[in-house]
Length: 469
Image 1 (cartoon, rainbow, N blue to C red):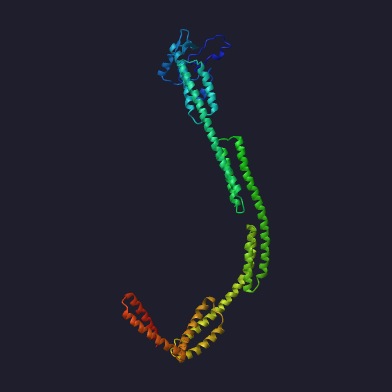
Image 2 (cartoon, rainbow, N blue to C red; image 1 turned 180 degrees about the vertical axis):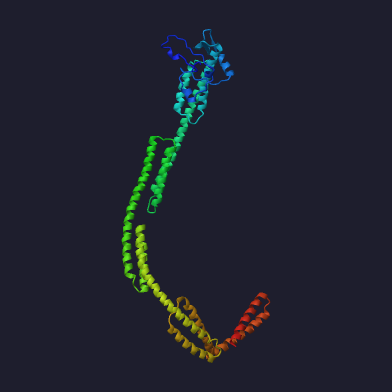
């Protein structure tokens, strides 16, 4: 089977003085080989013939029109106004020779087309552009192909301009991305500086530490996922960010030291309060000691915090002393309450007797009821205290009995009082005179509203008159 690789002897000019460029006749498999990758095509040296790819017969015939083959197998191409030899293809027909070199032209053009498409990509780098432009420029300078070489060079010039435009666009995009990255990292720095500037007595150190930790994680994530910014800018921003963190860390250490001092003082103060509470816990001076325990509680609240673990242990000691006292006081109160409930039952029984004394109508009945009520009140006073919540209720019921008896007594006294009779007679005369005057005013009044007002006044005075008669 014939060798399927196409070879050239272009690089042998120095050793083979004046030798012709000769290639072995290709097989059909060689002429239909797959096209290599765009990167391989761009970087493949001109001295190595690329594997041909499938091209349309129309394109091949069109490019063959730019070449010819002499009777010795030498292949020539029309390059502008000149004709130059591009190789030799012995032991093959002219059609086969022209077809091979036309395919080489189309392969080279395919490189340019691939590069044109590559320039549209967002992933291409300036270095790749420069290397490809250099390689392709050299390849289209005097290519050993058959086809419209001036058109190929014109396409290459167009690609150079597009390549330059692409590099400029990449540079511009990079600058914009750099500016955006610097702005984003600056925003992180400014947040850190704002936290450092806002430190004070009311600072939540735990929360602020979490915020600094979050900002540092954002900084690291930004470094990993965004464009690398200039070292000078990166160093300056990091210096600012690190300075803000240092300010926070120093302030937090200072706060922690002050907190430790405060906690030590609070612990000492609470231990003293516990000692006083233990001295008071067995006291039976309920009122005075309750007041003192309230004062100790106020001092406890003002003492500050000694730390969670310390505070819990200290509070347990203080609470134990307080519970000892207040439990004893409650036991005493329970005993008193039991006695007061017994007293309440006794007084409610007396109330039944007292309320049975009323109503009274005559002065004699009032005198008898008063004597019995006095006996009840004497017994009432000897019984003792009742629960506080029942005191007003039962006292008011007993007072009500007293008021009903007193009302009859007062009425009887007024009837025998000469001065009261004189005042009553004088008031009766005044009321009768006023009623007579009102009758005249009502008779002479034509205004319905005024007349109704006079009649209402008359009705009131008549009620007064009836009450004293």
